[in-house]
Image (cartoon, rainbow over all chains, first blue to last red):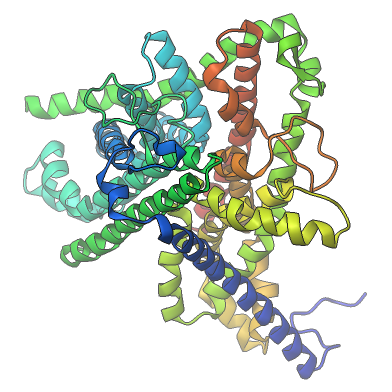
Amino acid sequence: MKEKTLINPGLNLKKRKRIEAFFKVLMLISTAIIVLSLVIILVSILWKSLPALKLSMITRTPGGGYYLGQEGGILNSIIGSIQLILGATVIAFLIALPVVIYLNTYLKKSSFLAEAIRFSLEVLWGVPSIVYGAVGFLFMLSFRLRASLLAGIITVALLELPILSRAMDETIRLVPEELKEATYSLGANRWQTTIRVVLRQAFPGLVTAVLIAMGRGLGDAASVLFTAGFTDRITTSLLQPVATLPLAIFFQLNSPFPAVQQRAYASAAVLTLLILFISLITRSLSRTFSRHKIH
Amino acid sequence: MPREKVARSLGATLSFFPMFLTAAILLVLLLKALPLISLKSLPALLFSSAWQPVKGKYGLWPFILGTFWVTMTAFILAVPVSILTSIYLSEYAPGRLKKVFRPILDLLAGLPSVIYGMWGVLLIVPFIGKCLAPLFGTYSSGYSILAAGFVLAVMILPTIINVCLEVLNSVPLALKEAALALGATRFEVVRYVVLKKSSPGIAAACVLGLSRAFGETIAVLMVVGNVAQIPDSLFSPAYPLPALLANNYGEMMSIPGYESALNLAALLLLLIVLSFSLLARWYLTRITRRAE
């Protein structure tokens, strides 16, 4: 039997180089496809949004007849999205931080409880956002709530919790063990070590984690579809329904009026710019902070 | 000292929350789905293709097939592109290009699904309706499995590539150098060393991408047509499970059997997604542990 060798003796060097070149071209094409799709997505949406992209889009709420193509803007959705995302991220953070600290300072890495917690976070991370929306809706009904800012905040907080905890867990785990040991040797207890050393070291990572979760929550439509409702006014109470950008885009795009559809494109441009903005902050922050980090 | 105690007990209490939430989600959906399951047998619900809520017929088969077709199309389109790109980025690309590519991937991963859906409606749907379908000699409105597959493929690319890159980067440099020293070309190193070493991880990355694709809702809903029928070609519309939920879940309260059926659909979707994502995760941690 012919033995399979690493370098195929049946092929001469020319042929081998030709195979190499062929696959390299395939790889370059694939890479180009990815870059191109991003460019096409961004350019086509910005291009389409240009006719409707006026300042009044982001400074006014929808007026009467807005959905027939008359005056107004999407200020209600912009503010609504920000309210929703701030509330949800604060709640998710308040749950995630103690859990992650507990996981990393008080539990041994391989203890049953730690494994169970990490496993359940893994499961939650995989739950599709539409299922969070459904469960949030059932929860809302059982508490006799209507679709409201509160219900939306709770649902999005659940969606963000696993994303946030996992990202935070990863950064806190990276804090070197020697650093903690040095602190212990100076007589600090675990609490002091966590607050003054571990969290400070992990701070840039924590900020990044929060921003990633915010971006995810901001763009998600399926979770707020049944829980947050929609309104043309600016929400002033937790129990009122709230407008969100993704849903505003979705509803406007389904309109039969071209003028309203164009506003959907403009709203999409606004949402894309917000997401871009968040990811830019994330990058620059993590660069600034990591200068002071001890590795 | 008390501060430490308070912190510790707070952490201990809240740590049960993820487990509680996981159990609660599964239990609530199961409890809500039970009335219908006890009324009709589970196989009859899953494999019947009659979906007529008004007449009390709740066959989920068209939706299951719709989910399957859309996801598979996306999978087949996304996998070769992402594997080739990952190999290029990890084995060939100069450092500068790698640095430029990071934000591109991050941005693709971060774009909201409505944006993808809108892109699908603007470009992919007309392209399929006006160019691709006539080319194959069929008629299509454009709102089809293929359109959803295209959009979904781009959405899961960053997930697959990110995990693939991690896996590829964990291949020891010494192995590659050894192969190069034996006179292998760069591609032969990739083919006989790198891929051999990392193919389980790459497979897991693809399965993880698959699990993301199953649950994607809004973008698919916008381009897939939403017709509850057994799809007969890639150009025909379909109605995947997440779209079914998104369109009907909010106003299901009037008919009790309907509510139960939709919750069964949600449970089914959740179980499909979780089985794939947990399988991939479990496999990946096993591989990385062995690599350490």
